[in-house]
Length: 202
Image (tube, rainbow, N blue to C red):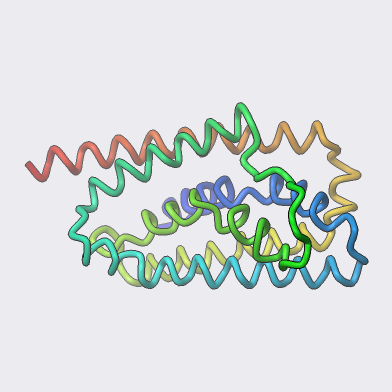
């Protein structure tokens, strides 16, 4: 189980991408006061936790209702995670800042969605909590691991300016790309497992 927790932590860290979110956070909150930035950081983490926990709870039920097999979803999900990893390596995993109406809550968009509770993170928690593969205790452990990653992300956002001064733009870019490589490798392993399940089911 400890091996699964380490694997889940690495996959969730890569897909939630705290470093990429840090850069985005600094960009979209540049015009806000320190107190407002603190509130935005806390809200975006809370929204992300709600979204990802809801995915863990209802994601499997939706798959069952649509009669989508585990191996089909795992293969598709692994491919998406692999592409997400490639995007982190060769581009930017975080959405770019856009000139939009600032009347909306930036904690919801673009911070909670699609940066923290990204399509990759949603896919990762769904794969890591599949009812057919994992016991309820393992799923609960994955949920706790996800909350730990979110808590670390929140702490980093609260200290965003200090962290960015230390690692700089180049350091952030290097870290994001390293995590992209790790995510791509984990996705390939998951893809191989999914293909093996598909052949075993025939």
